[in-house]
Image (cartoon, rainbow over all chains, first blue to last red; front, side):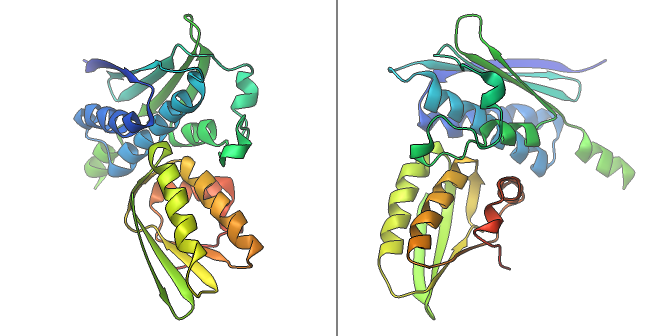
Length: 149
Length: 102
């Protein structure tokens, strides 16, 4: 029978919480016995998604970010959602090097990095406004490596 | 983020220690600009061996410093990136402007 587990945490959209979000997801995923590379890939992708919320979602002030992590067997599903201003053109926003804030030395590589470090990334407008980023990654390679050794 | 630096043989060696993300980006930018502003050197080597985490925010920070040093004809080189940083550098073509050295 597949293992399943779920966690959710909501925190202020402040850059100081980026490290918290990374460590929170990484700690939750440890039960799958991931490799260090898999954990670092997940931390990088989570950081990109949370940074997007911190930088873009709430230009007029304070807001919240909800981070969910679901484990179903060896599949990790991470959801990062906000209730902010949303994204005008999601397809455009996902293009590498696209940024609405070029004057702030931003690379515009956030979504490209998420896609590169995870198996699949979905970006949707959240029903309460805002953005919902869902990322998937299968974690089983360390166990495979050990059993194949 | 802690930044250590020293000049040796006309080279400015910079060691980034800690995490480079949106939260530490402003401090990193300001500190690097201060370090780059002084001293007698004709090239810069940024050592990432003590950088525990970096996301794409780091790309913006590094490209910003590259643009400033380009005006002074001072090249910047990168060494000891983590596997994740290396992947981001390759995706973005950063090594085309800041080559990796061993």
